[in-house]
Image (cartoon, rainbow, N blue to C red; front, side, top):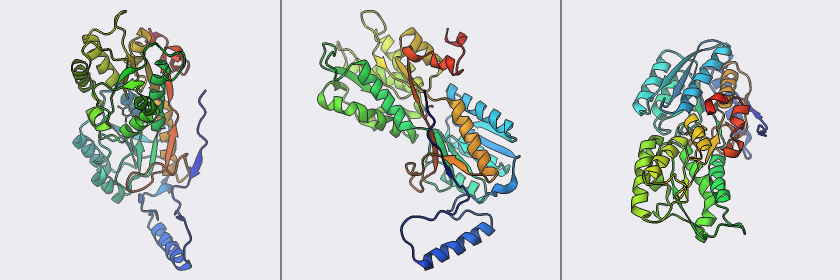
Amino acid sequence: MRTRPRPLTHSHTGTGTGTGARTLGVTLTAALLTVSLAACGQEAKGGSRYKPDTGKGGTIGLAMPTKASERWIADGRNMAKQFQKAGYRTDLQYGDDKVENQVAQLENMITKGHRLLVVAAIDGSALTDVLRQAHDAGIPVISYDRLILGTKNVDYYASFDNERVGEQQGRYIVDKLKLGKSDADSDDSHSIELFAGSPDDNNTKYFWNGALKVLQPYLKSGQLVVRSKQTRMNQATTLRWDGGTAQKRMDDLISKSYGDRRVDAVLSPYDGISIGVISALKSAGYGTKSQPLPVITGQDAELASVKSIIRGEQTQTVFKDTRKLAAQTVQMGDAMLTGKKVEVNNTKDYDNGTKTVPAFLLKPVSIDRKNIRLLVDEGYFTAGQLK
Ligand code: GAL
């Protein structure tokens, strides 16, 4: 059973008092500044200049990264539906994984005077200029799933606990290979290869750090061995999460480092990467009774991977219910636009290099063959889809 993190409320229009003692003079100056900024509809903390008291209506700009993955299609569709239900129009755009497309789409949304931008960034560091334009036009921004970096012009972050996703993937491998247990398989050491996500996505490092935190003791003890020796994140990244790129890298790793040895596990941070890895392994003869596929993790519970798990190919995925993330984001956006308190449950960990962005994080769930039924019970897929 998942329990929702206990919400804190966060006053979006609050002035922020900072920490530590202040002299009366500084406090007075700050108070005066607050009053004068409030008078022109600005936030004292240097956030967006939007006016939260204008109620419902207007258009919400939804900037999603790509249609190449099912999850972003569902994210966009769910948010559009739910924002419309809450009384707004929506403008849903996909950037085809090209930074310049996403920037142009956001510029266009700003020109059209949309009231709020919800952005799942293609490159988390590439939006500073366009978000300054949003700020100048008084349009607030929610960073969706991926944290936008290096700008103060992002108001809130809605995502899952991404480090936990990595921990779940690492833990799954450790448990499945029965590492560190007295009834361990006869082999003392198991070979593993490591894949990371796109280097320009801020989530990549959370997934990697979470997984490596769990795997590290076993890499150190030699129970896990990376035969390719590619153990640094920058050797393992997969630009734009592309399955074909992962497939090529896996082909390469097998031919250069494995010869007559077996790969026992593959850390994959995302289902699209897992599919590429599985193709490479199958071309190298894995996937038979005498040469079974290794333990392969994933993320997103995409239909193709869920079916692959049922077939016994991919071993695990991490389910992040995009409907819940959409609902949370709509609630946060609506609260911002109607001047209500915005619900957050983390106000200290998401430093984007320029500010600590108040966040709401949902809980991910690890899925394998044993609990795959949960996806049907939760209505994420129908039983028919999984046949
Ligand atoms: C990440 C996201 C993952 C996965 C990946 C590739 O930012 O958190 O769930 O979807 O992008 O699209």
